[in-house]
Image (cartoon, rainbow, N blue to C red; front, top):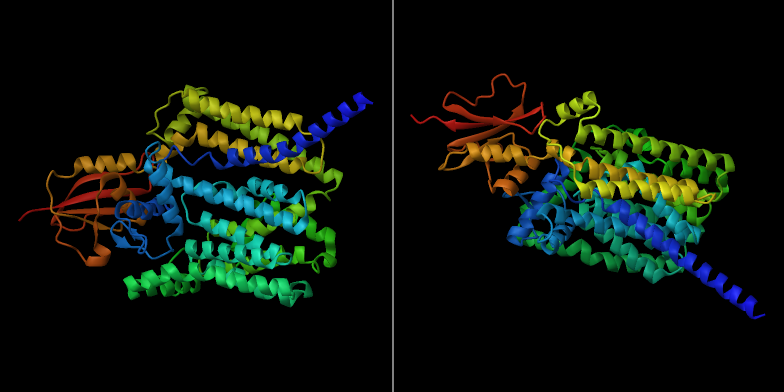
Length: 556
């Protein structure tokens, strides 16, 4: 009898250990996915460079009301992400370069996004679907690069995740659901303006029209609480901006919100109505096919349930709003992944054995192949074997100097071995393909951002080009004008050299002694006139498209 009690106690302890070990391992996997790529490289153009320029202004001036880029107001987005990045830079910059410390803000917002997306998945579909939602997001191809960049869309993504959790919770607990809904919408608004309030507002009003489940007292209370919770987010910064400058307020509200969305301001890249439908098959892999399976299995009956109605409505409204906008980029599609991941999580446990096996072996063999390719290329890069591949990599990034780094090698080896061990120890289950895919994406990203980050940074960084430019500057000059100099370049010129140019586009041709022109290598006659002589030209290592030329006025 005593032995029986001991065995029962051991089994109970073992079950408890497994119960607590699973969340720990999931958190460890999320951390291993979030951290690579955040440090060890300069701000890359276009998005990181100009974003850091705005962060740098806050650090230098303490002014958070008027976002400023290289000495000029830059009213494209509200300042929440830039303020957060400035706070991280202030805290961690003694140990890290300023730009790397600022990039940790993206880790903070991605941790929030994964956590609240998991909470939403669990609230909608029950225990087990929370961590599956997070795993599907980690495994999504479209999220991999952008989520590790110094861009405000990462904070917007977190705002969407929090708002969707608030909506999911509102059916059961109206007040907490409303608080999270209002907070998520507020974070999205202070990250990127009116996009998230518009999308979530449409979804919140559409749901009661779809089903009686949303026409409840709890949901009504939730919307009222959300309206109160979001009010400070919607008013504090806009009021402070308007007090500072009504003109800048209108520039932000009218030109950079309505004008950019409707297209009359001429800002942003062009688009086509089906842009997001074209990229979703690869961008949302593997979330999209799993989400479609959930809907196919549930048929029309599933669309009558609130747990399906919320992610479907959120996806369709977000897709419609993004498709209607006048500009489109893959960066803007990040919020589409959240409802797809929730739907995907609901369908994983219902996958047929053949689909589970196919997804598992496709993921296992595919990631093993890509890991081998990455290591093979690294050997060529650092050791010159084989010679023809080494020469090709050298030609792509001529400024890179090979050199074995023991720490980099060790971290990359840990990522590789951890993935192999995880795959080998995974027991057959419906969740196994999702785990393999998430772990494989983590391993592949970890390898790329350790073994190749310095090589990529050599070609993307403007540091060496700016250093060459500053060496060519006269010891004494009155001012430096610029023509066609992009926002990323102006931001990095201020950060790396402390130089603010006077733009010809704004002031006309100023009477400066020096003029910096950004153009292309194919420009036939880059000279601005006979009164100027060229004293320098340069470009990033290996860049055959951009060319920068410095001219000095000829004294008469």
